[in-house]
Image (cartoon, rainbow, N blue to C red; front, side):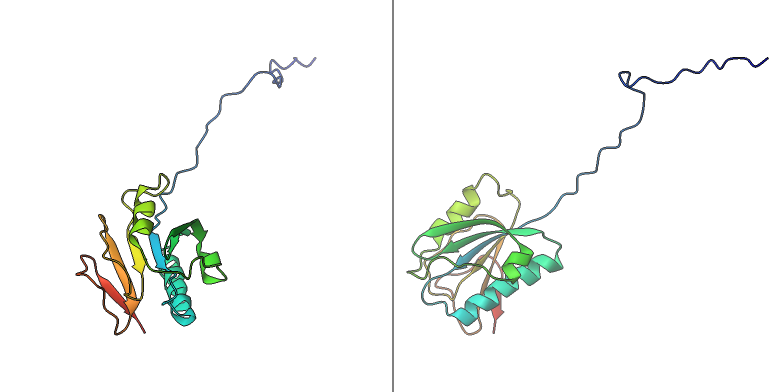
Length: 157
């Protein structure tokens, strides 16, 4: 004679104890870009600027950069994936050059981290800028800024 098993099958309505391992949040870094899209920036220089943004982001494993196109008025492009920056981006602007409103827009954006650095890309024909956080400038070789830069200045040829 076989003894009946004392085990009972679980019902779907009764949850079983278990372990839940939530996925770890990985802090992803980003940076902001104020890109001069005025008429004085030629297509070649704009192409090099977009390439510099994409290569810098890829080298530092940044999934997206916060981009503001700026001529006479700022045009917020939001966060652009690196693959999109490296490919085709529709550039807004091609008017005069006033970059400070673009810097202000970027620094005041709710979704832009307060510790993220800013890269200003211009040909040097711009207004005097005040960037109150970590920042750098990317300008063409031989160009000069109309003010004393407080951040590093990198050159593109």
